[in-house]
Length: 287
Length: 179
Image (tube, rainbow over all chains, first blue to last red; front, top):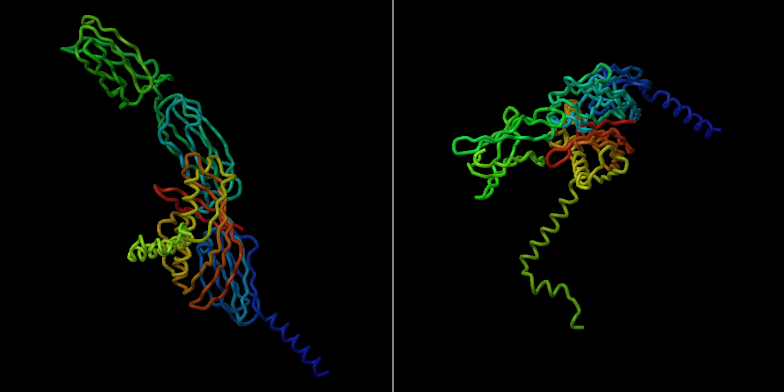
């Protein structure tokens, strides 16, 4: 009989301890940058520890009290752990703080300079972020647009997957600056892509006598879409006469390249820019 | 019997004792450095797109991600932000600098016993400037209040990771814990 009473007493004591021991209530759902309440249960006092991706603090609590986390405390999305130590017992609960809506973007447009009228030469990669720079993991649409003067707007919508969206775009037919924009929700970021003339097309030059030399000069150098090639492009004139072969490199300035070749009674002169070969002139008796 | 290769006698005949000592020193030092860099990291690139991950890139990511976690472990355990080095940048760096500052002010430390990472590369940008990965990490997390271990928890943690390259290595720009 005495033994039974002792066992019963031990059970009651154990149950009482369980009821008095601290416990924790953590939120089922929490969002970045909004206040979060972590409740404690039980009787007595203890220490509440909170560990998160950018959070680590302790707080002395009376069990039953609720601890409020400020929006600043939960600015980072991820898994948080609340730990309650009281009367030698340790209880822990985890909860997830989800990212907020899209408010920012990290937009990488590459390259910054592309040939005009070329397929799939511009790439745009966007990371969608909330106000506190957490990746927004839910699928959200991202609009990419490429606008350039005298060219139709190119538009594409891509769903961001796990915070990232990307696209490839053709460059416009006309050279000049194009505006590459990514938009999602309230966030919009612009980048400038410089579109320059591609390889020269129909490269032509003419020659005329100058003082003890032959002056050679190209027509305006343009690509096949009619865009003037950028200044600085190298054009090579080659002069083949009875004395031998000579080459002169000339830089395109304001769309035209010119050079002086050594005077000769008879010569064959040609022009090239990169892999593009232009016309050929047979120079006879100074004409 | 004359052709039996007797290594010790050959070594003692051809190599001076000083050289042997030096060779042993180099061997053991190299062993220590090879073991030091960081936790075990595996990287799967089978479902990476739109660009494929080159072998050289794969090796660099493995090396630098492991080294980044080793640095993070030291920084959090010793409350020393300088230990983060240059492998943590951007949002990830800010996040851990904030955590270390809070640890310091509250007298707490989080210690990670790192049992390895399984990385799955899910996005590699077309021009090769950004890599997004999933990390399934086996971690034991210990919370220390002063020198007292408050709690020790062992388990699997999941992270979404964004890495970007520099001239000679990869840096962790985002490390977001996910359920």
